Amino acid sequence: QQQVKQSPQSLIVQKGGISIINCAYENTAFDYFPWYQQFPGKGPALLIAIRPDVSEKKEGRFTISFNKSAKQFSLHIMDSQPGDSATYFCAANYASTLTFGKGTMLLVSP
Amino acid sequence: GAVVSQHPSRVICKSGTSVKIECRSLDFQATTMFWYRQFPKQSLMLMATSNEGSKATYEQGVEKDKFLINHASLTLSTLTVTSAHPEDSSFYICSAYRTPEGETQYFGPGTRLLVL
Figure 1 (cartoon, one colour):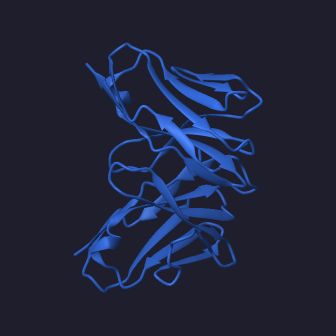
Figure 2: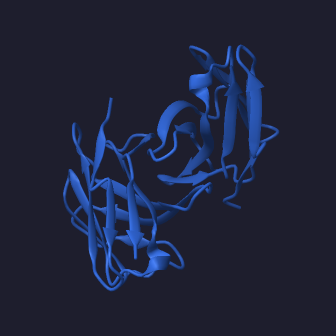
């Protein structure tokens, strides 16, 4: 299965709060899991990525948690800011091809 | 970082005309580039994989005669939408892997196509 299931579809978080977006996959052959941030009318920009042999990766306010046995991974945005308001896509890579989740529209209220 | 550019950023054309979109890797060589299509508030849909010096590989359901892809150099891939119709209106985005093959796809800024 090539699907990557992403939830929630949309998310509203207060400024300073934690935003959490979850993804789940079926194909155990996936070997790389990036998260992309996309602003309206722009291309996706790589935010952070993780390999399946690592359980957690942190870069600034962004953290990926990876649970290989559950085939799930999540993005945590700490101290969420209005400038973080965007659509976030998780993805999974196999054979140089990315499979994307459906996206989460995040709104951080001031 | 790795920069990918697209040109034009937006184009409006009449139904029946052909439109060419360029994708360039500015600071790295890209053996493989990808073309995606994105409808409003939807995810990215892979259309085709473009390989330098060889024919593109199209995803199921994508008409190769309608969406012509040429990857003539290690820094340039082009997508030509032939005989465009209103249903081809969409946001087209390219991406590239840095060569030698890395793990990360770097995306261009996208091209908004509107067919009248």
